[in-house]
Every structure is written in C-alpha cells, then in structure tokens.
Length: 204
Image (cartoon, rainbow, N blue to C red):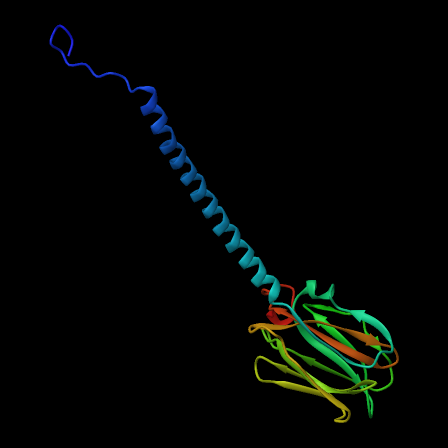
C-alpha cells in the first residue's frame, strides 16, 4: 500500500517469469505432439488404403511346359474387361487362343491346326476360376464365371491344375504364357473387376 492508501500490484519477479516459461514450453510441445500424431494416423490410413488396393492383384501359373515364345496381355486389359475368348483345339492339345478385351481382340497366339471355338461373356460377367490339364503343352482348359457358367476346351488328359484369385471379389483380368505351334503354358492374372466399358459389345 502506498502513501495515498491505494493497494498496488507489483510485476512478477524474475523467478516467477522463469517458472512460467516451462509451462508454456510444455503446452507448445504437447500441441506439436498432437499434430504429429494426427499426421501419423492420416499417413497410416493412406498407406493402408494403398496397400489394400495393391494387394488385390494375384497371379496363378504358369501351367505347362517351358517351350514357345512368351506372350502377355497386360496391355490389352486397358481396352476393358474380358468379353469373349477364342480357343483353337485339336484331338489332343490346346493349339491357340485369342481374347477380346472390351471390343478389341488381342493378337492370336499359337498354331493354325484345329477347330476354333468362341465363347462370349454376358454383360458384367467375369471369369473367376480356371482349371485344366497339361503335359509339356496345355491339353485342357476350363473357365468358370461368376454367373456359374463353365466353358471347357481340349482333352481330359495330363497333370491337373486349378487356378483362382487369392483375394475375394477379384476376377480374371488378363492372360500370359508361352506359345509356338501350340499353347505351351498359360498364366492367369487376377485383379479387381474394371468399371463399365462404354465401348464393349452388347452394353457390357
């Protein structure tokens, strides 16, 4: 209290200012930790989504022998989903094949001796399982769709194989393998079904 009788409040001394400084630093540090935690959680979520998207693809095969020239339809899948398949067969082997992606046919691979068979998928229908037999060359191929339909080609002789996607909800996206005068070997690439294809035949 001063001489006029008024009570006065003195400024905090150096010791009080020093005591308040750690509390401010602690609060700032807590805010930084909270921001870092939110960033890490967001990063983990993004990586998880990306990881799930990548992990949906899988591969089965190759089934068959080691001869022939390698082929792959990895680029053809950009034309759309598989909408039709042509298989050439003779009395014992799968001779050749061609696949339609969207409205575009892939290049034919294999030989020319045998009967050419063609099957078309319904709009939105996809292949979800492949099985067959081989012995040096592919001898039998059976394709099963998500509509419960099965298409069988070739003769029932040789070593059996069964191919299916590792992840539920994925379908056959494209084929690869080896071919010369016959289909030496075949591999199956599975992934999420593509979106609707406005250029595909019959509104698929």
